[in-house]
Image (cartoon, rainbow, N blue to C red):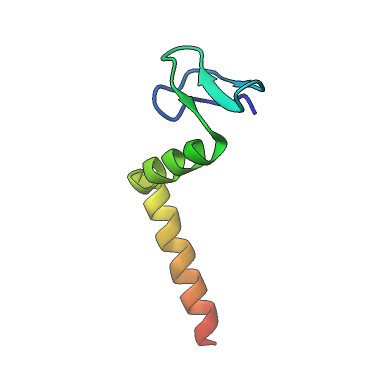
Length: 66
């Protein structure tokens, strides 16, 4: 997977022996599902994400009205 740590933004590395992703910077160790949950939680507090989501919701509502 690689990618960025949802906590600090550091590099994540997958350890196949314990099936967990570990951050090379802060040492956070998570399963894939936990990473997805943290990213979703953090995205909900991102104003840009909220703005994009509101636009998607509006467009969906608008297209269903026609």
